[in-house]
Amino acid sequence: MVDKMTKPPLTKEIVLKAMRDFFREKPFVFFGTGMSCALDPRFGMPALKDELIKNVVLDPASPEQERQWEQVLELLRNGSDLESALDNINDSALLQEITRVTGRFVSSIDREFALRIARGDVTWPATAFFKRLVDTLPEGDPILHVLTPNYDTLFEHACDSIGIPYTSGFVGGVERRIDWYSAQLSLLVPERVRFGPRFKPNYRHRKHVRLYKVHGSLNLFFHRDSVVENNAWMWDAPDFSTRVIITPGLSKYQTLQRYRQELLKSADAAIDRAHHFLFLGYGFNDSHLEEYIRRKLVTQSCNGLIITMDSNPRIDALLNEAENLWLVCKANDGDVDGTRVFNKQYAGRLCLPARKLWDIGTFTTEILGG
Figure (cartoon, rainbow, N blue to C red):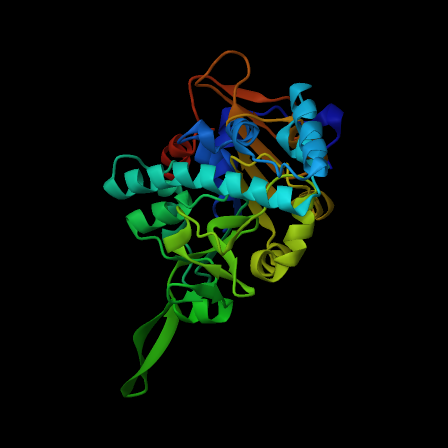
């Protein structure tokens, strides 16, 4: 631990070297709503809050639903955030209605941008970044582990647009079911290997992403007593199925336990094995993931890097506890294109004027060179 009185000053040269050195090792990547809001702010919580206020329909025969929803509205009027306000909901039918409205709203925006990505009109901001990470994976370690709480499918469409192989663990036909073993087998590619005077077939994994959508996804549904992935339903969900998206509020922890096998089990194991972590547009407001993050960054002093437009009190608190955690965010001194960098090992913060390293596209070009 560095004594506060003897901390060295943070310089541009130290920062640039630290950023490049960080990517000499493969990170476990978390990305949050900041990566979607970079395309459209409607992917964020404020827009969802407005949508729920406007479109949630209560059962007129249920005074309890009306009471719980009025509590939510009162908290929101008094400045509470959406997640805290929804902690008051435990009526199962009302929770299902919130899930319905949330899924319909997010899917409408997702459809718009998925089609624009397919046409080449827009590019998901982190597309080139992930392409660079996957392309530079070592042959002996060809899997990039990526976790997101986002419901939308922008990452998936971005990968398809430039040919980044990925799997979310589901296999099958129109209705796919979770089977990570079979999913991994599908990413094997054959090669001929000389064995004495002859060649024999061998199989190796393609460089690819394992995607963990721990709060569910627009294309996940509970149907016929199991969780299925069905892209044909994600923009127009049928009435006979239930979307598997974990909406904000305390009830999400009960729902997560119900779908732990599909959403969390493999992610839990992957996080446990990792020791190098990257966070993109991630707000650190998922308390069920916080135990993993704190254990890795604080207790085990694993290396971490946060790249985000805006910091927040949760990030600032974590930075002051974690020994090897960097923050790259927007400068808060009026320089809209400037960057602020912090690491508790160094004295103070460093501001880089007119250098948008908090923008993942700029970061990719200036730090990774691609």
